[in-house]
Image (cartoon, rainbow, N blue to C red; front, top):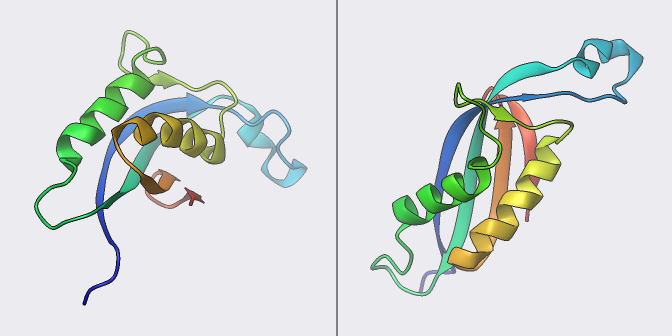
Length: 116
């Protein structure tokens, strides 16, 4: 018997943010800067026949999260949100589409945060 099954969806978006309390060694992060953010979301499923349609669920979460944040150039204005904050906010929205097992948010597909 196999263990738990989860489906994984996600999306990418361009965003601007800043870290006002950045350490001196990375003080440039205090200024607004741009990243391509990659989001991955895991949802627990109970069977192998698309318990959750991850394309639909991912698209809905993307629209719900980014809708109020996008400027006219389709860039998300994130203020001082960190990857950790973005992951938490997205987890809350994603939970309305099923049981969330994790959310990952990466900056430039390199470093980021994972919420479980």
